[in-house]
Image 1 (spheres, each protein chain N blue to C red):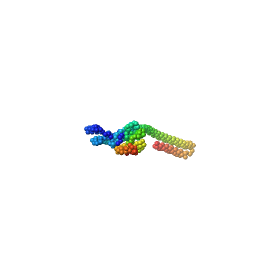
Image 2: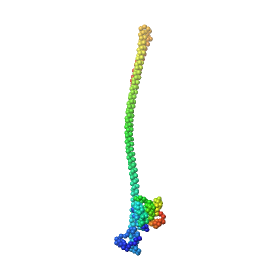
Image 3: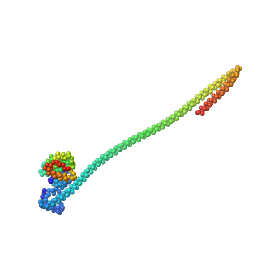
Length: 237
Length: 145
């Protein structure tokens, strides 16, 4: 411990009284008052109290600042953490955006392809429809032609049948006429022969007359039948 | 009361807290605070063993993790005790309570471990009571929680 001299003691007390300036700091810890100097002891006590008060105040302030610093450091760490999270989220969002854009591009391309294919398909369908319509028309036309051909064939067939029938009837009539004429001529020749020879002509006379009557009747009957058949066939057509 | 005390800690605000707490508790007459273990190492290298006036401090408090320094508190203690000379009471003052680190500190010759917190005064007071034992090398290693 340091014991101050008389002069120093007096100066220190004087300065404290007049200017309110006191010794501070660790120096106080090594200062001691001369034995029995109560005034200087009191001065040193005041100095120590003032020094302690100041130190206590400073300690409190420093602790507060230290605590605030810790909080700030913690907050800064939290900020860094949040920023990292934000950056990560931002990166993820960016990646998702890029992916979405890629998907959009792919979808658009796909959509364009699909649209193109659809158009092509529609075009093909239209063409197929047109072809089907054409085929239908062609079929219809062919059917009409077939019907016409059939109808013509039927007409031809009918005509042929009529012709055949007419020919047949002509032949029948011709043959019938020839038979009638033959029988008539034969009977007439026989009657002439009988008359020329002067043979009995009674039987031949009545036979000739009956025969002529029959022949005429049959002839008209044949003609009438033919005319009737012809007329009936004409009505059906 | 400890004549000269040194604190090696990178946190400057804690220098003020420590100095004021030591002054208020009448633990030390003078406190010297350094913010780097490199600076401290340079000083101790000079003091041990060539310093005839024994300017080295009586007691040294070292932080465990000293930012901006080449080595940590445990290495600092090892250097002071085993490279520069074992001549002062030395220990760790740190907010860490890692048992492995505490064991390491013990192995290199630390005499105490004070847990640093907002309310440091009760631990320093307790340490002050045990100081004579550390000085005489009779007190065992202790952790002030």
